[in-house]
Length: 325
Image (cartoon, rainbow, N blue to C red; front, side, top):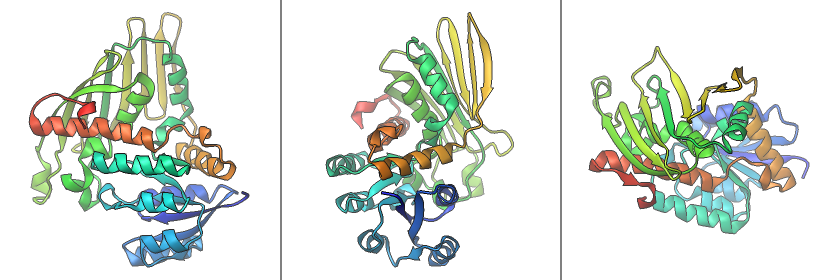
């Protein structure tokens, strides 16, 4: 396959990142788009010389595409993944891959059985600094993990509704959760505390929490916390720190710090992780080499399970094992 014909369902800001990236790839061609906002859809179709479709199902059935980017909010997925998989269309499904674990596991089985190439939007795995951290930590015993996702409130109205976004841990801090899984192994138990401190004053319709603290254990026995809030427009932080008895590793955005008895280094990546992710996905589709990808839909489902376990913990007031969800 020389050119990979790509379709998009959902053409908002996240899709725009992918589209701009695909324009840089000689083997990718944006050929079909759909969005519930018809004006926005036609703007994008004109900009990228793609065909706009009347609905998502029509695009999947009629577009003749090789690959599909699903970039809708998590509450607006329906059975799109299954329809595409049954048509043999390869998938990049933006994170989070859903809000209901039973539905996501059903989709996971369909995607696996279909034989298509599938992945999700955990782009930070494609940083060279993250890969260096993974190699360094491969034989290390991690004892404690501290993670942070601090920032302002996204503009999207749906994000503020817990039933539509799943809250900050599911929708944003999922990147830090995924990095912990990728670098330190699987979560075992989550104990979360969420609070509504200010958001409801800005938007009385909002149901999402605005401050959250999660304590957790991993399968290896490490302990950790993740702190997240959307009430900090002036100060942002998205980092994960790993502590052992004789080392310290921190991944903070594109920065990597390693401290041990032999070294103390700080590196900043120049990698465009969106470019690396999308280039790898297109190449995997073009060549049939799914092993090029650094994570598939099943990996995304496992990350979702950890975040939903935290949500259940906050709801019930007790610790929840990931296996429960």
